Structure formats: C-alpha cells, structure tokens
Image (tube, rainbow, N blue to C red):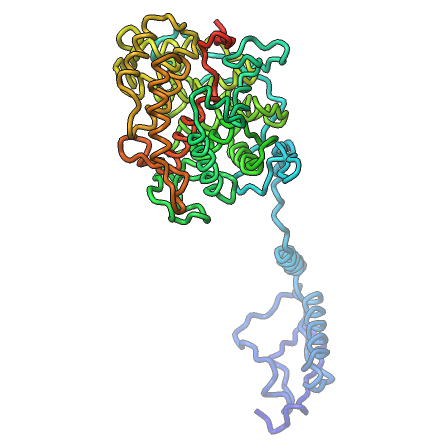
Length: 559
C-alpha cells in the first residue's frame, strides 16, 4: 500500500486502449500501483472482434464512490460498462433474470374459494299464552313470574284420530304413530251429551255443595270432616313453592324447610306433586277464576303446569323422571277440571294437548298405559289416565272411541272372577288394583246390575277401609260412593271418622296426614301425597255425584 491517504487516492477514468494494447503492457502510476487491477499474465490475446478494454484516466477522488450518492454513481458506471462491453446475449439474460426476480418478489394472494352461504329462516318464537292474571281482585293471567321452563302452546292445533290398526300383531306395538292432530274435538255446550252426576246439568255442579254444610251432611259428610278439609287446604297452600309448584320433598319448601316429618323421596316428580296438590282445591269448587281464599294459589299452580308442558305433534306431555306417566295423568286431571269449571279460553289449548298426549301414549295393542308412552300397561297408571280422559269428556271434549275400546280390552286382560277383581299387569285380585278396575268399569259404562260389579262391591265392602293404604282407600271410597246404599253408609262412617281422627293437629304439620308404610306411595310421596289423597277422600260427598243415583243423568263414553 502507498503512503497516500485513503481519501486522497485517485482512480483513473477508463478510456479505450489502442488496438493491440493490453493492460499488462501498460505501466501504472506509482500512485495507483497498488490499487490497479491485476491481470493474469497468461491470459490469451483477445480476438479482433472483442470489445476494447478501457483504461483508467482522469482520476476521481475515492470519496466520490462512498455514501449514498457515490453508490448511485458507481452503479451507473457499472451499468454503462456492462451495456458497452458485455455481449448482447449477456445483457438480455441479465435483464430477464432481474425481471424474473422482480416478478417473484411480487406477492399474489391465493384466490379465495367461493363457498355458498346458507340463509336459514326460522319462524319467530311464540310466546306462552297468557292464562289468567294473578290479581287479588280479579285474576286475568296465570303468569306470576314462574321459574319453570317456558313452553309454547299452540292454540290453533287441531286434533283428529290417527291410531295404529288394533288388528296389528303384537310386534307392531312399539311403532310410533304421528298424531299431529290429537283426536280431541271440543264439543259446543249445546251439543254436549249426558254427564255423570248432578241434577243441575253440570258435571261439577255438586262441588258448590262444599259451601253448604247441611247438604254435605245429607250426603254423608260432617262439620268435622269439612273442618279437616279446610285445615288440609291451608297446609297445602303453605307448602307451595315460590315457583308456583309443589314438591314431595318438603325440605325444598322455604316456609317448611324440614319442619314437617316424613318428607317424600320423589323430588324430581314436580308435575305429579303439583297436580296432586291442586286437585283438593279444585275438589271444593275453587278455581283460578273464583275462590274466596286460594285464587292465587290455584292460579300459580296451573301456570306452573302449563309452563312445564312439552308440546309436540303427539300433544302436550307432562311426564317426567320419577313420576313418569303417573305425573302426566295426575296433572292432566287438574288441568281438565280447572278448564271444565272455569271455561277459561286460555286453558283450552293446554287441556286439548294433555288429552291428546294420553291418546298417543296408549299401548296400541294391549290398550293400557304405564311408565313410558306406548308401553304395555298396568292397572295403576291406567286409572289416572282414564280419570283424566273422563274429566276431559265432562269438560266437553270428544274422546276417540278406539281409545275407550282399548282401555276395556286392557281391563279384560287383567280381570279375575269374571271382572269382580283385577290384577296389576296380569289377572289377579289385588286390593288397590281391584278398586281401580271397578271404578274404571263404572266410568266405561258398566251398569249397577252387572253381576261382576255386584260381586266386586261386596268384596270391597267386606274388606272395608284400610288403616294405612290411602291409595286403596281413595279408589275404593269412590266406588262405594257411586254404589250408595247400606254398603256406602257403613264404609263412609268408618272411613270419614278414621281420617278426621288421624289428621295432625299441632305444629307445622297441623292439617296434614302421614299413614306410614302400609301404602306404597307413602314412602316416596311422603306427607304431601298422603295429605292430598286423604283430603280428596273427605271431599267425595261433592267432588263427583253418584253415577247410579236415580236423579243423576248418566253419561257414558262413546260407543
């Protein structure tokens, strides 16, 4: 390297060499000797057609080549050198390579694949129909901020019969049948046929008797029995839950919170508990439209059931875990009776829906009902479903004749002694099942002079009321009440006095009953179940008027 400072070093501008002259034959200046380009001495002499090389002349300071502007100048000079000295093919190649590189650097987004968008249109949600309003003066809706799930009730659902052919083989029994229209036709009041009970023409007119103690005494009741009913209704009202329903598990009731013993185990059977608790209020003729004390209580209970109903093409279902089809039958009776007595138009759709579901759930081969829809039946569940259908019929609904025929077919399959006794799922003579079977036969049209009916009533009379089986007492008392005469008087005297004396008198349990383990329903339903059943037994004097009474107008199911 020379002693000349870097900034002072000069570079010569390249100029063309003379023909035949080559860089290594030219002497270099001392100043630029170290920086001059060195050439291979063994390089071949260029061909005559090659471009002439340049030599450096008019040296420029090195500082010009530094920095941003210097860099631009150097690039420009290099480009000029390539253009003037490089072959044409090389220039073309360089241009194309630069173009390709530039194009490769351009980012092109991947084309978006078109995906069709689907527009799903659904009908607007329907609101729950208002039933009646809770108001101390005049109720107009059943909505009292019920916590239960809301269910849409379609008031425009029509019903018609659509059942499985009864001649089908047993294997066809589980087959589902669409019943978009339930088979429940509402009958205009002027077209109603004959009804059970009541010289006044209304099937529930006898319930007004609950406000006339003299008439109650004439039918077999007493002041003590009516006082027991009054205390029981107060106890039931005090154990209603904030959501309007009831629970067999009394610990769920904030006002009780376990103060009452013998709580039930069926905590999830809320519909059954609510329906069973409502029936004693309705039994005295009270409704959500008219009641001196319990208008709001009944109102909230009905709203709870309506809001819990699951509506489908099969009708309105109220069956549930724990209560199964028992829950539906019991709750259906309460809804049907409330509509029959109040004629509230807002209760018409729920009443039609629950009746339609009973028709759908019937076993299409055996004719019975049990825990699940369309399952082979048992006498106990059949009793609740048939009572609900009868209540619906008395409310003005036309029950399909095929449903009635199948029910009779089921009873034929479990009867014994020619129809005087009945078993559970097979022929037998169980205590409670015999009472249920005889009551069903009464509602299905058996006359008082039927020999099997006479034998069955004698069997119940001989056995008498049970001190602990309230389920048997409930059905047997109705059979004896419809039969009347001396057998009824003897039965009633014992049954009435037994209940009046066994009712709890003190504490938070005052007004309730618990009958112990003699009743299969007592351990599971607990004190609420026993109280509701006992109360309805004491209301038998006006709850339903006797079927066979001379002044009573009989009403059979359609043939």
